[in-house]
Length: 260
Image 1: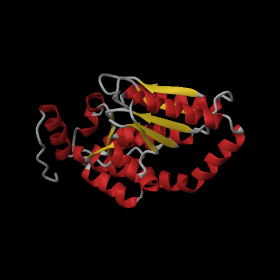
Image 2: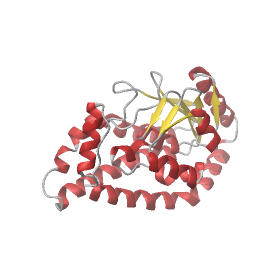
Image 3: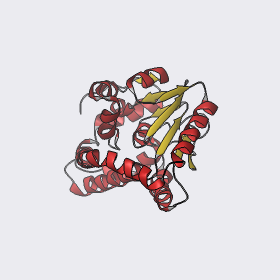
C-alpha cells in the first residue's frame, strides 16, 4: 500500500501548478511499482482540497484573456493548458492500482474532480463537498461532469453541478458520492487503509483486471466529454462574469452576473 497526501499551497491544499505537474508523475510511478497494490489519497491540515488555486492560475493565465475575443492563439494555449490538467486527473483514474480517497473537511471544485477519479471514497462526518465551478462562472472541466453521473446518478449530479451548492457528508453518503461516513479524520483514514490492505491481499493481476474491465466501458465516454468541455472553456471561459466572480470572491460579496 502507498499513501499520497495533498500538501498546500496555503490553507486547504489548493491545487496549484505543482500539483498538476506532480500528480501524473507520482501515479505513473505507483502504477509501475509492483510492490504497490493499492493507494490511499488524502489531504493534509484538516481538509481534502479547496480546489483550484485561482490566484496562481489567474496570474498564469492573465495573458490568455487579453486582446480581442476572436484571437485563436490565446484560446489554443488555454485549451492546451486545460487538456494537461485533465490528463493529470485522468492519471489517477488510469492507475491500475485501486485508489481510495479519504476525505475530511472541505472538498471543493477540483477536489471533487480528483475524488471522482478514485475507485472508492470515504468521508469523515464533518466533510463538505461542492461542485462549485458554476458559481465561479466556469463549466467544470476536469472530470466531474464526465465521471460523477455514473457514481451518483444523473439527477443528483445535475443538482450539484447546476447549483454549485455545498452538501454535507450525510447527504453525500445518501446519494453514493461517498461509500461510508466515519466519525472523524482518524477513523476515515484508518478505514481507507483497511480497504487498501484488504485489496492488497488479493491476487494483484486479478485486482487490476477487475479495475480495467470496469473502466473500459466508460473510458471512451469520459474522454469524449473531456475533449468537449476543454473546447467549450477555451472558447467561453474568458467572460465578464468570470472576472466578476473572482472579484466578488476576493471582496467577499455576492456577484452580479450579466451573462457577458
